[in-house]
Length: 157
Picture 1 (cartoon, rainbow, N blue to C red):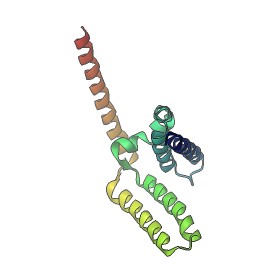
Picture 2: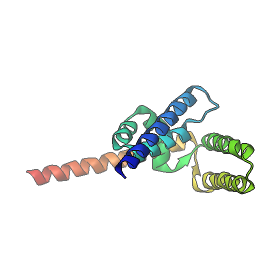
Picture 3: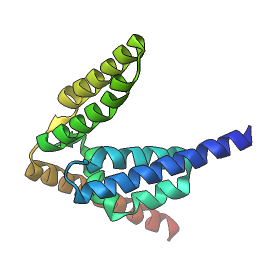
Picture 4: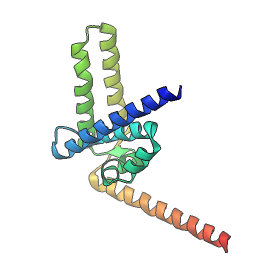
């Protein structure tokens, strides 16, 4: 049982690393959107290794491309379009290659689910609005941390 879990963790780390590489290439090539690949990296690392997850959360890549989305649950319209185009392209490949009608229908439903999620659940904001909201969140977190440090310091005296 432990051996299977270890193999699954290794596979998740490999998939996360491949996703990290693809996302990094997407920084240079505008055809590949970075956010979905970095999201996959985070999920795979979180499930596969706390050490890799902790490392990824501390990188500039995470802070620049994912942190705002994960904290605010909002994107620019351009970001949404890039994500949806990539998801549609990636899921369309098996739709074209597979002969099973049931599988094709299921994959179309998955694509539609992504569209519904990104259109109706993820807020659309301008880059300026995202930056302002994120700045407010960071200020609240800093104040909360300072308050915690002050309380902890008072308790130790």
